[in-house]
Amino acid sequence: MSQSKQLKLGAFMRPVSIHTGAWRYPGAIPDANFNFPVLKRLIQKLEQGKFDAFFMADHLAVLNMPVNALKRSHTVTSFEPFTLLSALAAVTERIGLMATASTTYDAPYHIARRFASLDHISGGRAGWNIVTTANPDAALNFNLDEEMDHDERYARAREFYDVVTGLWDSFADDAFVRDVEAGIYVDPARMHVLDHKGKHLSMRGPLNIARPVQGWPVIIQAGASEAGRQLAAETAEVVFGASPSLAAGKAFYADVKGRMRAIGRDPDSMKILPGAFVVVGETIEEAQAKRTHLDSLVHYDSSIGSLNGMLGYDVSGFDPDGPLPDIPQTNASQSARDRLVTVARERNLTIRELALRVGGYGGLSFVGTPASIADDMQTWLDEEGSDGFNVMFPYLPEGLDDFVDKVVPELQRRGLFRTEYEGATLRENLGLARPANRFFEPAEEVPRARAQA
Image (tube, rainbow, N blue to C red):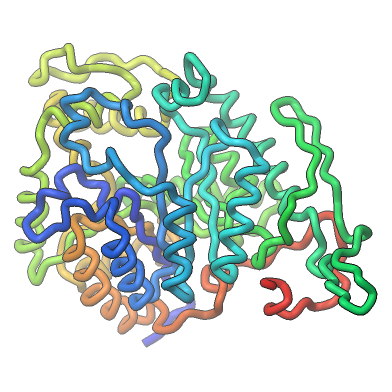
């Protein structure tokens, strides 16, 4: 059986499970988030399952939650994304390597150079998740007293994108002639000095590294606010959405792809992959029992800390068995805050109930058998709720193994997922075109071996 549309699957792997109770689950590896041999085994298992990408989220602060919550968190210590992904590139061949990097607390030159390096090291498998970092504690680690205003962060991010992609285009693909006889290494006529001077950023260039194998690493975005959706429509090739239901997913899908059409972008040049928390059982009852046990391992101290962080507002002083108070808008993630307020009002949840809901994981979940999970994923694909999913595993390694060994074969049997990778690069596997260099017309086809040299 086959069909024209197939799912794209990313794996959300930092933390290795987003669920607060994951490290306590029976059989789980408590230090999996900071254990290289374990992470090596996990990414190789994902590559065996033909996943499109291994995705690392990132955070730039530890003291972003109360100490009583912090002491229960398995995310306190994690590898720096580029260091880990560069190491994992050497033990994999096809799976994409995606990382978050902040446009608020880093410099465009650093970001451009790191991702270009990762793309060359991996043979064209890098992807950049553009984030603006909605975390006031992160600001304190970067010589600031408070975080940047929400809309200002997004305005800076838009300019940041232009600078980074401009730096990736510093050299034509054929700029490095390496003519031993003539003694000429690089052709200066095929080098561009960006010389950017904008409202937020000033950058001379050029980048001191050859153009990435993919032209540009794949551009990823996750913002769901008005500003985030517009940034995604203008720049993103993959969007990690957070739609909690099919109806919400379809509305988000139509909105963002409609914005693309309005500015002249082909909607097929973007893949929308909402996060999906997946628990697999031999029966639906077994899967639900696993989820119930997992949720029971979350302490209220941890869950209220998670809730406060997502709301951008401290509700720990209110009656935990009372309703959620009015939550003012802050500089925190507006889409996350709005989703929580809406679900609390619609379901008449107390603060405790809402906290326990998000303390483990409160977003989109598929809890069931391989067949029922495949049914759900197929429905999202067929009804244009998504182009695939960024899969979140409940605990490691069992949760990941269950998905690769049981759900992937079911998706393949239905023709919903590849049995072999389409190409060598992340772009090829996602079905995304290699972007043209904005400053140079192509001289001739550059052999891949030379482009990576």
